[in-house]
Every structure is written in structure tokens, then in C-alpha cells.
Image (cartoon, rainbow, N blue to C red; front, side):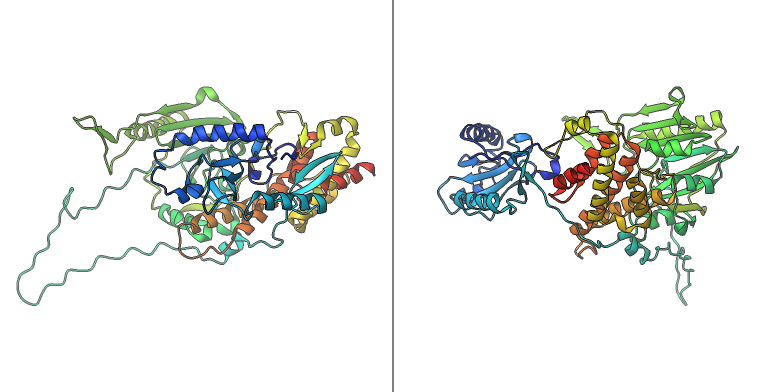
Length: 533
């Protein structure tokens, strides 16, 4: 039982492409999985016989009848051979998520559906059989929601929460008769307040730049700009209003330096494209703390000055060892006091070396300029491998035998179809860029230009939808969005990235990205027509 499947594309297609195994492959896969299953046999000893078919890692009475990614035994379809209620059933196995049964009650039904798919071109196990260059291949015919719910629109309809004003202490009212006393405990007494935690946020300093310009370089969203205290900024950053976008505050710290601290959202100051932009035409210094590690990075006009950088790593110190050798973790103490001290020491050194004057505790209650960010796009990585095969198409040979002008025209046509499939051609900035690309005209991808802002907004939508879905897993109420919304926004984001790569990468690498993302199974026929024009 063997059918050809072509070359694997990515781990996202783990359950879709399963070449049928021959007898030798069935034996090898089954023996291998039996050996692995023996390692967890003791843990599964309590399972009833019938439970083993569903919950055991790999029961011995099971045969892997297909292969998955890279023709490996890490996933595939299996057949239950143990007598009982599941005898003969076909299941799906994946080593990262376990086993589940398919709708096929037996091998006969599976083969019948396979034969029908081959005869009529119908989907089989999520894929469609195609004849390509005298070979049988399997491919996806994908679609996404045309109008996915916008997480940013939901956020815009949600008010920003406000820190309630501090309540004044109630006055002491004497009783009309009898005695009373006021008792207080200070300096660690029963009613004493817990000590304030040491504040050491990620911070970046930029020379010859005011706080407003610093926020602009970080990608601030003007409609969200307002003075905020640290408490207000962190409250706002964690609310639906923020839609998982980063929140930063900015202020001045002497000698022409401005600084920004991040108060919520995905970390931005570790990103090289952010530091390069902040240091454009000036100097930027970043101070970050990640558990045991404290790091200082100095950038001059987009170039890191490695000799000026520092890195300190400290041991963890919140564990104690009892006389019997057992370890205990102390609660309520700083796990890395060495890095806490290193942060303060390096900040003092920045004051001595650069004239930066800032105490993290001083600006907590001060309303500073702040805003949510529309994060910068990551830099497009350079291609480091030759283009060969893309979804069973020999792209390397196609590039060699096709003139660059004709290939570019064909890839631009494929890009336009991808934009239509995902819906990004509805945005006027992207529609204009596609028209210009189709005419082989320059496309304006200037930072903070209309096209750049549109692409960054699509990426922010994708991040916000993913965040809403992740949060819904821990809540009783259903999320206002669905997995289908996430799939649609992810498709738009990757299609927009394909447009950017078309403009910035060598043509073969751009073609690889565009063709890999096409959603219709008819893209090969369309490409042949594009090349024939």
C-alpha cells in the first residue's frame, strides 16, 4: 500500500501528507515505536485493556500504516489489530499530542475513500490528489474567512481603565463614652505594609532626542498618547483596550538624554531593528534585566559598539539546602540579588560615562509621556540556501531556464492572486503596491509610510487575535473571536510579508515564499500560463 506524496513543506502540515507505507516500512516503524513505548510502560500499567487503544503512547497491537513529516515515524495513520471494540479502526498518531481515532472504521473504508479521491480528484484526509509532471502529488486547497473579526476594532470600542483615586483614611471618631485607643504596628509589625518591590524595568536611553521623538521612533500610536504614571500604564497595558500592543513611557534624564521604559506587552528593546532605529543619527544605550542576566548594549548610528557593552550573570540564591540535603525555595525573596545589584551598579556607571541621570524609583508616580506601540516589522533575513523544490515544483530549474523579467512578471501575478485569496488587496495601500509591482515599478516601503503602517497594523491584528484566544483558554466566557479569525489574520500577515520579501529579496527567494503560500491547488497551472504570456 504505497502512494507518492512529494516533498514535505513544514511542520504545520503534520496531519495532511501521509505516504502509505510498504510492508518493510510498517515493520520498521512499528518496532521503533514499540521500543519507545517500553520507556513509559510502567506509567501506563494502570490502563484498562480498552483504554490502551486510546490513551497509551504506543500499544504493541498497533501498526503504523503511513509516514508523516519527512517520511518519519513521528506521525501518521495507524491500524488497531488487538481484538476488542476498536479492532480494525484507523487512528491518527502524532508524537507531540498523542493518538485519536479517525472517521474510518477500518482499512477497507480508508482505501475506498482513497480510490474515490484518485478517480474524482476529491479531498482525502484533508488533501487533494493532483497529476503534476507525470507524478501524483497531494496538495492543500485552502480558504480563510473573508471578513475576520478585527481585534483592534474590539479594542477601540473598549474604554481604557483608570486607576481609581486613592481613598483618604477614615477619621477616628471618638465614642461617646468609655475609653478607646489607637494601636499601630510599624517597622515590620503585624499591620505594616509590605516593602515596595525594587523597580528595575527594561530601559533604553537615546541622546539628543526629546521624549516625544523617542516615542515616535518606537512606533507610538498617536491616538493612545497620554501622560501616565507607572501604575496607570501597567493597568492599561493589561486591559482589552491595549489589544496586546506594547506600552511604553518616556521622560528626560539629563544632558540631552531621553529614556523609555516598557510597562507591558511583548518585549521591544531586545529587537535589533528597534535599537538600530533608535540610534539612527545618534547614540542609544539599552539596559535590560532577564532574571540572572543584566546587559548593557551601546549603539552608534545603527551599529553596535561591542567594546562598550557589558553582560553580568548572577547565580540564583532563593534556595536553601537542609541538613538532610533536601532543597527548599524561599518565598518572598529576590531570587537573583546579584543581578538586582548589578542593574543598580551598571545604571550608576552609565551616569558616570554618559551623563545619564535616572533613578527608576523617581518616576513611578510621575505622569510621563506614554503610548501604545505599533511594533516595527522585523528585518527581512538574508537568504542562506539555494532555492530548489517548492511544493513539488522544481523551482531551481525554473529559475535557471526563465529570464528574470518573465519570472518577475509571473511571480508578481502569483503575488496578486495570493493577495486576493487572503483579502489584503482590499487595503488601498497594498492594492497600489501590487499594481506597481505588476508594472515593475518601484514600491514605496519607507518606514512609517502608508504601506509600512498598513503591514504593521495587520501584524498587530494577528498578535491581538492570538492573545484573545490564548486568554480565553483560562476564562469561562467564550472569546469574541474564533480560530478561523486567527487563521485569516495569519494568512493576511504572511501574504503581506510575501509582498515585502518580493520587494526586498532576490527574486528566487521571493518566488519561494509566494508560491509556498498560495492557497489554491491550481497555482501550478496558473504559473504555467503566467510564464507562457
